[in-house]
Length: 576
Image 1: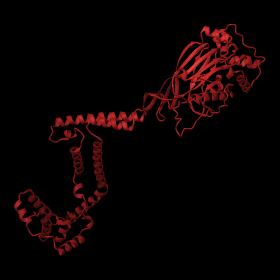
Image 2 (image 1 turned 30 degrees about the vertical axis):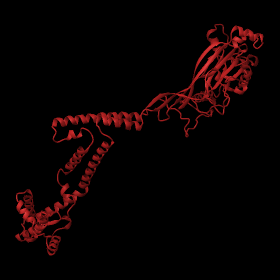
Image 3 (image 1 turned 60 degrees about the vertical axis):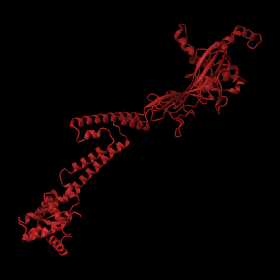
Image 4 (image 1 turned 45 degrees about the horizontal axis):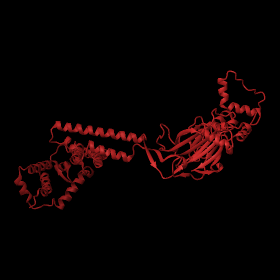
């Protein structure tokens, strides 16, 4: 019975079964020998003949006895059980990882802040300095990332000198839209032209004796009829364009110009090669366009503008001129010199807001689809014109007769017309002089070239349009911050604040990963392995309780000592 009880008090030590009393005695003996108090006996003990442990018969008997008295599952050794059952092992491992990091890291100041032999005041001072530098670096990095996410823009202006430049299109409009000799005598048409003129508004506001025209005889007239009348009464090319020169060479004006229908009436556009851009390689008055015009003030009629002269619109080839929105006025009886300067503006497409708080349309993109229905080319001016016409169509179901395009159909509540990302514009420096001297006017009258001197001063205009220089001002937008900029800037700031690099950041990441892996293993062990160890401990305790405190017999303790001796002796051997 005593033998059975001693077997039930077997516990696990490594992978060999020992009685509890024997295990405790041998453990104390090993600790004493390792501490040096029994150094001589330890050396002599190590020179004993090597024993491979219990005999095969004893091992078989021991296995038979244990299997017959105790459940093997309760006595199975769990890997790592002795380590992770110890309190504070997780903290110790994390401290080891941190110690290893601070010993080898290249971040300046960390070793001083964590040195064990440094005074506490110095450690705290270094810790504060390192923390402050880390805070400054983090703040700077946040600023850079914010600038990147907000898509901030920086603008640069460059001046490019070119050997050749594309000459723009030039549209000339006579402010006198109708020749009175060709306006029909229909009262309705004359009344409509009167109310569309600026004079009617001025007369109603300023003339106290103004009397409204009699509308009793006014009949309904279609927009198509009014358009035909306006086209027929408009100045012809022969009447309007007297003489044309391109780069000093005289041309027939019908070769250089073609009629263009605009809301201002019939105009004429210089676009000699509409399919190919016109190139020029020199500057100056004689390297551009020169035109002599006759506005025929003696044949003036009610027009939309009260002024006399011409409207000059310089625009990119292929664009609609829109003289009501853009251009310069030139009065009659003068010589006008127009020196042009080209400006290119290249904005950033979405998601960047190229113009204040608005996006631009990237018309050069392969995925761009023109949203306009009346114009084949998208421009902000075309979009605004289409929007205004569509509004009129939606409000009254009609449109202005001088709008030759088809009715718009898109129901736009507001004109959302962003500018193009790539734009070309022109600025002009205008200078004036009298058309001719008094002597030359008399000579022209004698030669019957211009017999009426009065009309020569009131109706004729000589204009020259040319490039002032072979340079182009380019306004180019660029992202204020890019990923490469952030890497370069932050790398420099990291060196200034902490003396570290990207590899130092990798060291921090490595430390974090090691700590995470260690904590994950601790969680895994607690959830899946620790319960089995607890069950085994409870089972052993239950076996000890059922033994009713019975002590093992001297015979069994002696056998246990021999078994323990056979296992400990090889560990204590000292090699010769």
